[in-house]
Image (tube, rainbow, N blue to C red; front, side, top):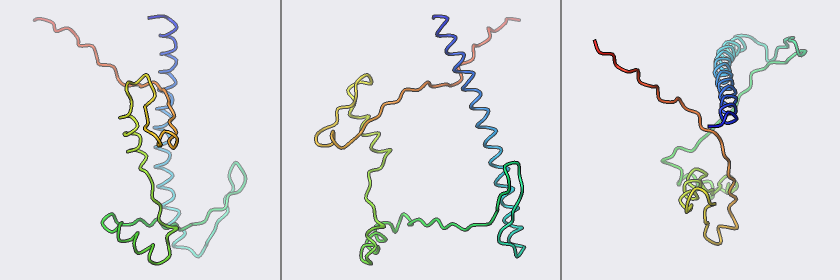
Length: 151
C-alpha cells in the first residue's frame, strides 16, 4: 500500500470520527431542546400569555406555542379513503406514486454488473433518471486475536 493511500485513509477516518462525535453531540442537544420545549409548553398552558420575547446573543426572539396537525390514513382503510375522497371531489388529495425504495431495488436488479449502469427497458429508460454516488464505508475492523499463552 502506498503512503498516500494510508495518509488519505487516516485523514478520512479523522474527519469521519469528528462527524460521528458531532452527530452524538447534536443528538444530545436535540434531546435537551425537546425537554426544554415540553417545559415551556407546559408554562404557556398555565399562563395567559400567547407570546414571550426573550433577548439572546442574536437579538430578541419571540416565542409562541404553535399547533400542527399530522393526519394519516389508517392502512386498513387506505383504499376506501381514496374512493371516498374521489367521490367527494377531493381528487387533488390523492396522488399515485412509485415507491422510491422499491424503484431503487428494481433498478439494481437491472444491472449486468456493478461497473456498468443498469439497462432499463424502453420506454422507461427515457422516464427514469439514475444518479450514481460513490462513498467510503467505515466500520470497525475485526480485532486481532491475541495468541493464547500456554501455562
